[in-house]
View 1 (tube, rainbow over the protein chains, first blue to last red):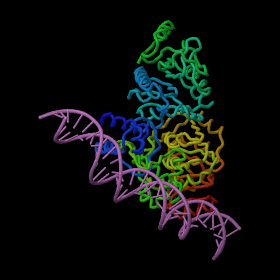
View 2: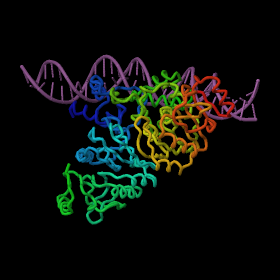
View 3: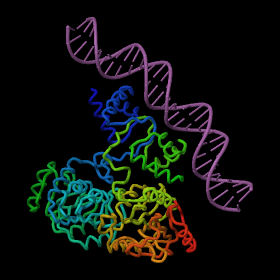
View 4: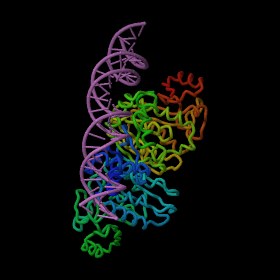
Amino acid sequence: MKKHERLGRIKEMLQQENGLPIQTIARHLGVSHMTVRRDLELLVESNEAKLIHGGVILAPRSDQHNGYSPYSLNSAETVMTEEKRRIGILAAGLIEPQDTLIIDSGSTTEFLARNIPPDMRLTIICYALNIISASASLADCRQVFAGGTMHVNTLMFESPEGLELIKRHRATKAFVSAAGVHFDFGVTCLNAYERETKRTVIESSDQKILLADSSKFGLIRSDYFAELSHFDTVVTDKGVAPHFVEQMNELGIRLFLA
Amino acid sequence: MKKHERLGRIKEMLQQENGLPIQTIARHLGVSHMTVRRDLELLVESNEAKLIHGGVILAPRSDQHNGYSPYSLNSAETVMTEEKRRIGILAAGLIEPQDTLIIDSGSTTEFLARNIPPDMRLTIICYALNIISASASLADCRQVFAGGTMHVNTLMFESPEGLELIKRHRATKAFVSAAGVHFDFGVTCLNAYERETKRTVIESSDQKILLADSSKFGLIRSDYFAELSHFDTVVTDKGVAPHFVEQMNELGIRLFLA
DNA sequence: ACCCGAATGTTAAAATAATTACAAACAGAA
DNA sequence: TTCTGTTTGTAATTATTTTAACATTCGGGT
């Protein structure tokens, strides 16, 4: 293993963990601690790292670094991150000025929220902390949040009053995520509490846009909330199997491959 | 300086610097390193920090926010910041395990939210982005958010459904902020939309705790929402004029001077 | 005022990391 | 191959931190 390769590995490890003992790095790389120290000298000189003899650091938060919003779904347990990012960016391109959007919870929709173009004078309705966190700073946008009790794993808020609030609104476009997309058994999610909200969202919106990376196709999850044919538009990635593409074309669904 | 106050300061310092030697923290706080260590034990247990004996951390990002939660009321246009911090820290000390709190919007309450001690198993009800942003990472807490439309200057969300949600809940303690505190004309705020929410909050809570720095005393603002006598407890700073203190004593209000 | 428990400070001993110097392995060129 | 400069590993020294035990202070309650 060459020096620059080690440097890269070290930087990766640091970004994942936010802070590491030198011993751990050495063990992980199978080199002596002196080698690691000498590598670190370079990183410190170029201001990419900071040595600390003994002390504290913030608990590792995968989102701290690359400019992401502080409340973000843990990317460690998130797969298909690159696909999701591309899907979110593509979907953001569907947004038009004056739109009223409903943005569902999820990591894909988080990418969408982060990539909303400025100066659109939108109304944004959402109900998850990562979404509001990513979109609240947009200027000239009306922000509406449907409250309730927070679910820690999805950062989603849900309550009867939140549903009422969604019902009272009308959106031009709803961006909905899913954990499973199946042609016979419909579109499904992982948690019972999501179901009612997603159904309400679909009912309250003109265009219904499904965001789901290719790994979700063919999967059936526990909680059913819609038929695939209920959606006007599906955004997924190029990894989706051809027969799914065909089936969606037959259903007359507008399909985007990010 | 109380324990929870130190914890708050330590968290602030950590967010600013991304990693600190214990010695530095101790010097900065004017306490022994053992005290800091014992404080850190708590933070580590609640997964907010990580100890590191010797190692590296990422270099502090210069462009990042100055230690405040990303959604935070603009401290540039905020005055009395130090007093507000002290008030928030003191008020956080009033929190007891198992409490159900309602936390109002405002910059003082933001300091409160940032300094909530860990391991309290609280239920936290709020309706402002800076408050949820500051408190959502607390482990073992139920988070409830009353949604609605966001008001950009206060980061507060408000709607009929949000009010309903608050009415449906019962809190042990409500921490309410105010823009004006006057003995004849009562407690006032700046915006009409705050009025109904604050009134509802006060009605839904057992203890009603007013947080207001000394500059608010004697002021009358446009929107009246409560008599001062409706509050059990007032937390302000030492800068408050003596005759206000007397008047509050006469009313039987428990008074704390931060 | 007194006692008591909790919180904080002090000290010394033990563990661990940082530093230094030097030896060994390695790679490229004459 | 042999030389040479670079990189890596080892070992001993030094400096720090961590841990633990004990002393002290502080604040609340009787």
